[in-house]
Length: 620
Image (cartoon, rainbow, N blue to C red; front, side, top):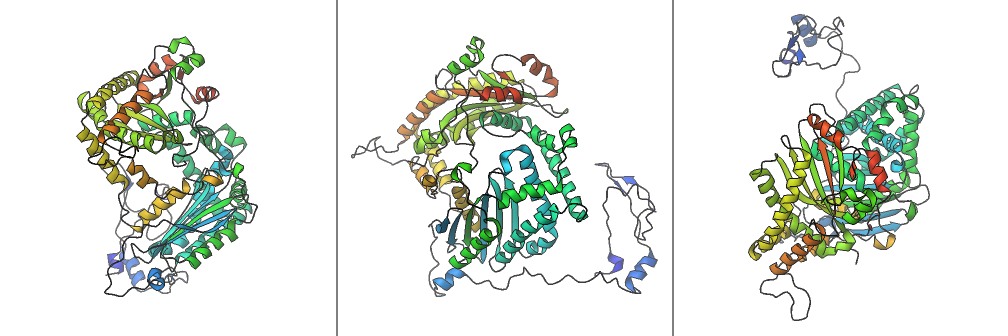
């Protein structure tokens, strides 16, 4: 029963220990502070006085601010399916088959492209709206990116109270800042989702105007901005405390990805000497967000689910009317990211000198774990395998199969038999700009990075022998497993939307001639791993046919070209992270040829590196 006698009142606050005499009847100040035995959390409790219970049961008056919540305007009442209205079926008719058709373009302008697909497969009264607002402004500097991220956090905090009703009614939204601009994602019951879209997009603009007016006029908004700054600073600094194997991945990406900002540059914008001289302000944040959302830009919009064409066009109108009032974004203004080529051994000798001639991996990037309590070392051995366009469908399929087989071999050798560490993995790796690669990761509390690297190289030699001896039956089995994953059907509407949206976003950096998404990309990729039983390598027409023997041959040729230590085409580097106890080993390597010990060293090396082409493998 909902009565005062059954009330449990819990209060959390950072200053409760200081606020001993607040005069509130419900205060637990009469109780003694105690510490919880497991985590040491301080707390105290008292029984609610009988006099207070009687006041609650028989109040002399009721505060006018206390009232029942208003009607939730996001609760839907229309659960009809639009597909039945456009293509009605009788109750006794068989269930329609899954609709495999991809979304189609309803509207295409220089600054807007609208995609639409009405759901006929999952038959639920829900809709998904995805939009990307591309702008060159967010990622032009660490400060600009920080300001736009802060705006997204303030927006989320500001909308949380109002949109709470929407979440209770099954409608959700998300606005995120990414290097290419802002992304909006909304999902929920079809009847109320347009209203949620209007609420979110309108508030995105009015919030900018209020933030520009400053903290004097909007003190609560200033508090939210400062809260967002502290939160983002904490998240950014915590990123440096990630596990050593994750740090390996990050520092290696900082080397091979062009035009990227380092985490320390983001921290410097939010604390330290530079921040003290040039603090981030709410007005500056608003101006930066305004330039990103209302300046030169373009939009990609997807409407899928229980939504017809006219409703999809209305969604596009909302996006256009709110954000696309400036001139369209020029193709050359779209931010582009490229992957740089790690030096081959011959190239490394020209850059570092003859001291690296005997090293299998001449380029090494090292760092000491940021956390003083970190006890693990880690390495990531990265072997670049070329651009997507160079590999094509067949090369990508070969890399997937090789990595799929390599994972179990690496785990069995490096983890189970050699017991180097609990975290061991071998996998495909892709960096911004369309470069593919093969990586081996090991994290260990007992073995130093140089030894881990040596053992990974030894495993690669062993794995080459395993490929030569692998049976065709196993190759066929592993290829079939990958094909099953590639062709796995979407289990719910959200999965289908995510797949389609991913293919659309994959074209965002491409030229106009190449911006048509390949929605059948995975199906086409699967054909390069689908073995035709009873066929030779070449059929009667002379065309190549996939067999277990041809897949095995492709893997061996691929390994010998890109992964073998003696290959002149091998582009390898090793990212090493040392625990605090091994800091002396790190310091001893500083200044050695081929060893990059900080981000300035990486910057210096980038001057010598050329970039891979950015064209994807599905462009013929």
